[in-house]
Length: 550
Image 1 (cartoon, rainbow, N blue to C red):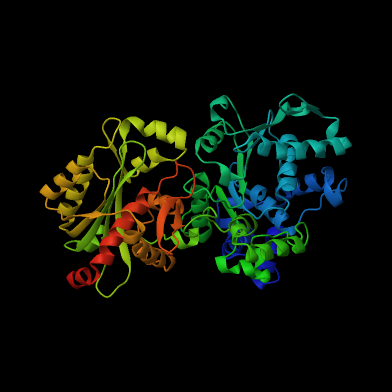
Image 2 (image 1 turned 90 degrees about the vertical axis):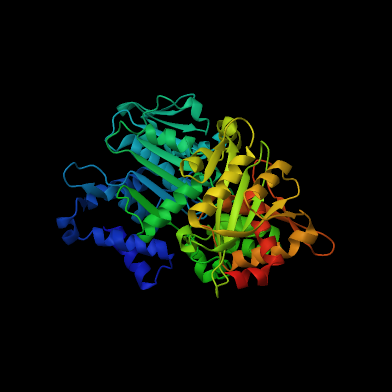
């Protein structure tokens, strides 16, 4: 049975409501199962091999808890289609599987633990891999244990499986092929020497750094057809491995990039506003009304309508809408803008500068704001600065990819263990000279170093002190918020600014004035927001003058 084709037919006909990315992915997968396509493609669809894991799970695996405890697992159509996609496409020359990695985004309580525990047991026993090493990984050991315990419970309920398995201190051991299944946490320092054949990374949204992913991926290098599945809901932690993998998966699903060994399946709402539309809920919850209870989800949505403090959790966990924390100034949808521009478009243009200085701990950020005549859109370019001696410390302690941002040219390193403000001046001067710019004003916070201001003035910059209080910042911050929500701020999809914006909370005084604050831990920076807001103060105070000059 070709479950991919069956699932796709029901999606395309509207019988099953699905997100646009699920529609696009399964349309391609279904087309690739056609024998005519297989004649010209490197990869063929082998329905027999595609169905083996399904047959294994439904024959040997039983539910371990809840109303179906003790009963044989009967997989949903979307689960069968996914399994066939993972295992059914084969290189016609080598006979090896096409897909080596998969990103599977799905709302909670949609049967992911049951599905993955069953797949783990199949990979241990029936994939033809001698000495298989299967790992369940997560940021916390308790999370990694959930899949492990589910698999162990399945084994205990199956006479056919239990007689071949041995529970050891740290793993499940399958004697016929000397294979093992082990849970692992994010402490990647202890993961050397692994030879993984199948890796499940659970709740990827909670993993703050790439170390765990990179170590597990490298551990599969010696296997002929390894498989890594990242399965997760959305989350509120930004600029982590989740955002990187989600972006890759989204681009692959949209057809923007080609990655023939990567399978993206994104069960999510197409639009944030759909969270109040029951007909759209199934887009993020393919097991709704079967595994996941409709009345439970309805109750959560109604509570979120009445209590906005619960909204962020519902959007993230139930509907896979990427959110900031509940105290955040703006939602992720408000902030996110992937549109880009080139500075060459503004050669010879007027602009407004903003700078937020630090000494050692925080980032330093320099910003320039541009506009075009007759267009309300704001174009932003930024550069960030961090002490070179503190780079690795900041990467390790903050779990933020400053090193990756440095490699991409988004961040500059200052020699020593503190910010050299001359480096900031140099960036302004270089940028102005290269693109023949006319910075009308450069706004700086009142805590800036005096010699930096003097150095900038000597370079010809018109420096304006910006008091960091509600009287000065409130209206410009409201302007910036409105522009972000309308997607009128194009910042070249800079991940550092995006991260800073998601870290920005808002404090309101008794008069309704607002100022930015950090809404998470001190390690979450808002310096990019502060520098951009300084630009907006300049725009607010000199709007007509600036508009007439551009």
